[in-house]
Image 1 (cartoon, rainbow, N blue to C red):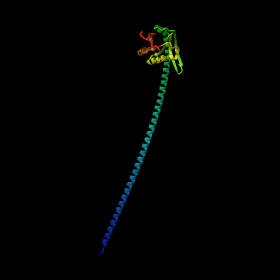
Image 2 (cartoon, helix red, strand yellow; image 1 turned 45 degrees about the horizontal axis):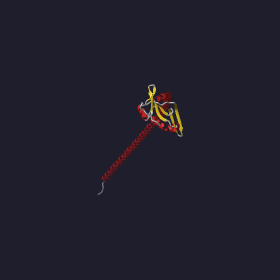
Image 3 (tube, rainbow, N blue to C red; image 1 turned 90 degrees about the vertical axis):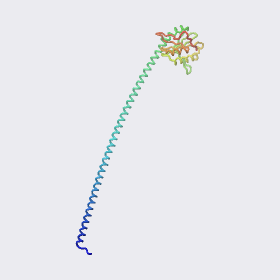
Image 4 (cartoon, helix red, strand yellow; image 1 turned 180 degrees about the vertical axis):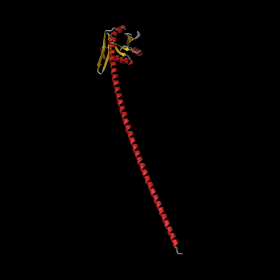
Length: 248
């Protein structure tokens, strides 16, 4: 069956419309591609902007952190420097106080030594003759600060009270202690070895003190020593009449 002219024109019209529709779809697709490209570019720009801002914020935070660390370091250094200076000042102050205290103690020791020397010379020595004569021991001689060295050993005695048969070793202290008593007992036990010329003598011991605690006085008494102490302005032998001195 032959195609008529109308059918041909109709087909041509349909082809034209189909081509137009295809072009329209191509244009729409192109528009969408362009829109997509635009959106992608905008997204990329937004991402870049965000990353740039984020990088700037990170840099700012790093700079701020660095600034804070530097400030903290400077503050720490300042505090350590101040602490070191304060420690040095305290050490210097402590050293000064220790020197002053040492000087004061040395002065007191010197004064105490002077007082002890005065006590021995001005009180014990003058009273010794009378005190021991009252105890039946006639005194013929008194010697102060007797010292002897034999080899590596030495012996020092504050006062020696001597007659023809007895010799009394007196040790004087500002404040008498049990240790002082024990040291004097050891001194008494060594005496004849250092002074053999007194081998035939009866060696007696006495302790004297500006201050004598009661328990120390009793301890010396029990060890057989005369105890010389102050009673008012005078020195007296504190041992009672029942006392029997120990001889060495």
